[in-house]
Image 1: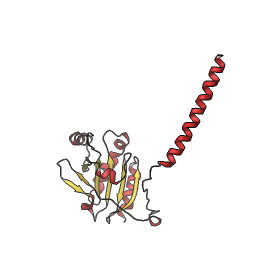
Image 2: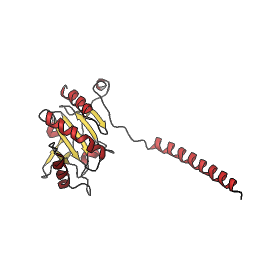
Image 3: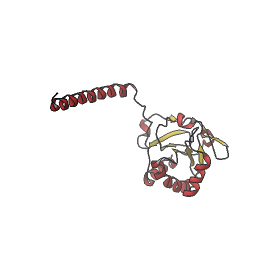
Image 4: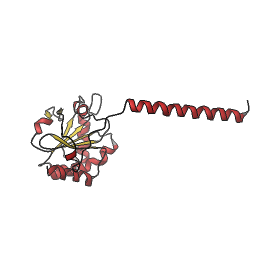
Length: 189
């Protein structure tokens, strides 16, 4: 067979394969679409229904448990993270600065995804000590918290008012200015 015909047939077959893959992807993505996290902002909060924050239990390094419901009456900043997550690592200094500035006004729940077979709490504590982080770290070793909030990528931050209502969800890493705007809005509620 002529080499030009082989190239033409190969290119045509590749084009058909790509078109078929695109069609199948389109069908499957509609059928199995991921539900979006309830991203709320202060300006749009009045237009959105109130969503009560799901309760969960996590553990500190000593094994003492804490539930989100234990913090009712105080605003909560809930953050899901891991030491191996580059975007998490980029935002943690801002969270530490915010904790040092507002730790008396807001309960910080820095939830490490220490799923079974995941990060060892001792290694996470060493990491935090090396970085100079003072915020409280909790471990979601049974993935209860991550499951309750539908966490499928990290970092993810959830801002909860004193009545236990989710006021904002921020998927992805945030810079210090953005974090401070969300904290200011939460403190005004």
